[in-house]
Length: 401
Ligand SMILES: *Cc1c(COP(=O)(O)O)cnc(C)c1O
Image (cartoon, rainbow, N blue to C red):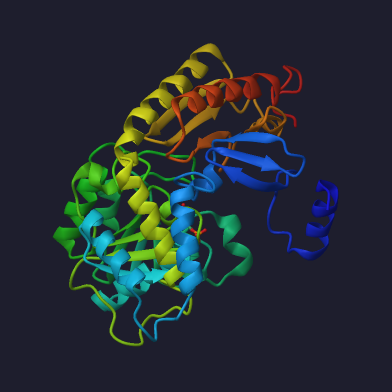
């Protein structure tokens, strides 16, 4: 099939819930993706942070292949070594004793919500405006964006939303029926939005004071901010944490972590595929690779270089309004009056660069942690070129597209 045929078949046979870029990727290597014509693209999106240690990582793939030849999934009717080993590893790196394994970020959050209601016997869940927690009805009820929700209402009752980065708003919103507060350490889908330093610490204190569970959604932030988990920057321990995306280098794996003492009883939660031997082997190999090569620590330095480059782009281009980032989770704000970010993302493909915009006029960068300094420089150079060459609104056409 050529590219055009793939695109036509997708339109006929796949549900049309995605707005895709017109490119068919066939294989990847490290920070690079290759399309059907053999063209090589530098990828600064990392399959939305799922590709944490690079495409076709040979050490991780060797471990996956070895497990593949032994067992893929037995279900949780039985025990597997891979699952308990991964649970032990996650307890070591998170400080949270117990794992529940599932297959995606939304399930990890769904599980977190069920667990909080079970543990407290209360119904109320407070989440944040502009937050994103997934697409299943429970996690979606915690998600903010109306366009994701209104067409499939009614949602799950018991959810309310407060402004992000406003600890006092949490204090006010808590009622005697509040089970938990759900928060992202950095709001990824909202455009890589950072709260003030100390916010997580403040909400931890308020939750302790009021007897409310703190659920931290680390589905996107795990591994890449310079700590294993972003909550560790503020030296707090959440009660429950949701993890997915990069934890198994692209193999579907979600995890809900919880403090000792917060647990289900038999039959209250389950998953046929959750914690399969294959996914757990991939998770273990990914974490093993990250630890062996010091990639969590290296994300600090690489992130600084990346951020400096973004600041340079901002300084040289009046159409760039802001730059921010922590480790290898970064963003640029384009000036909406001067730039059309969608055109920049589309045009970048022509420069052999993969970019992403989660919302509005934001470019988001979530490259594999294995990205080299040279690839960072090249990525920044191409990003600047894409911003300058594509998506520039003409003065008279500004705001009229
Ligand atoms: C991506 C994401 C989710 C949902 O994960 P899926 O694997 O797509 O279900 C939940 N929370 C956050 C913060 C995310 O970034």
